[in-house]
Every structure is written in structure tokens, then in C-alpha cells.
Length: 159
Image (cartoon, rainbow, N blue to C red; front, side, top):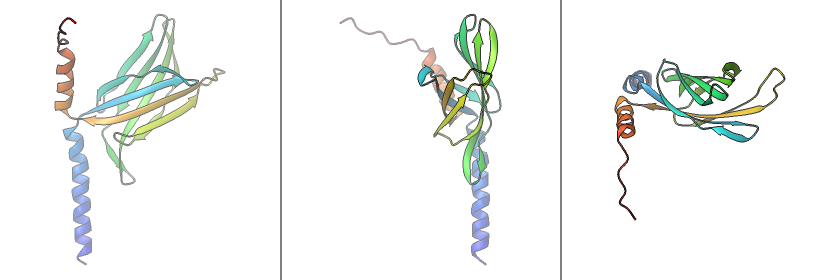
């Protein structure tokens, strides 16, 4: 009989800590590598607020570009594992027109690599690979990153 209350208390504490973590870390850093037919195309990285979509475009939308629309939802527990639900919409942009090429949804384990492979449809046939790492970030980490980006580079003495 003593074992049941202890286990229940441990599960309640675990569930409370999982919810508290998402409050302390309202952001997610999403780092990706994108390749087509084995050739590296782009390696964007961005910080998003959980539950809010964000876009990053690589290339020139007037000519040719790739747009990644990312939505990372707050971490959750799935089958006793912490995961971050992540959706990626990948558009190819040619001469100002966007064409949806892929829209995977996955449960990424925080800080661990997830590999996705797909073949573009509609007779395209190109094989695409998206490698993604989603890592929760605290407000302080995001502010420090912004401050570092805003600082001008230190002057180097002449050789």
C-alpha cells in the first residue's frame, strides 16, 4: 500500500515539472539543414516563441528562394517522453510564386536531431531532406543572444 501513494506523488511532481518548464522556456530554437538530391541548400536557424509561427526565406523571392514556415508548440509528454510538436511548411518560390513542397509535422525530442526525407510530388521527383533540432530557450538566453547580435565586432589591432 505504501508504494502506490509514493508513485502517485512522483507522477504528480513529474507532471508539474513538465508544465513548469514550458513557462520558464517560452521560446524554441529551431536549427535546420536542408538538402535536395544530396546537395546542401540551406542551414537556417531561428528562435520562435512557442505557439507563434515564424518564417525564414533563403534566396531571392523575385528569382528563386525557399521559405520555411515554422510553428513549434509548447513541450508536452508523449508516451513518457518530452517532445516539442513542430510543423514545417516548405515553399519553393520561383519568380514570385510560392509552391508548397512539403509540410511535415513531428514530435521532436528537445535537443535531439530529427531527420525527414520526402520526394516532391506532381512529377517533380526531387528528393529533399530536412534535419531539425528543436531546443527550448529561456527568456534570458534569448535576450543575451539579441544583445550579442547588437554589439559591434571588436576592433582588431593591425598586424
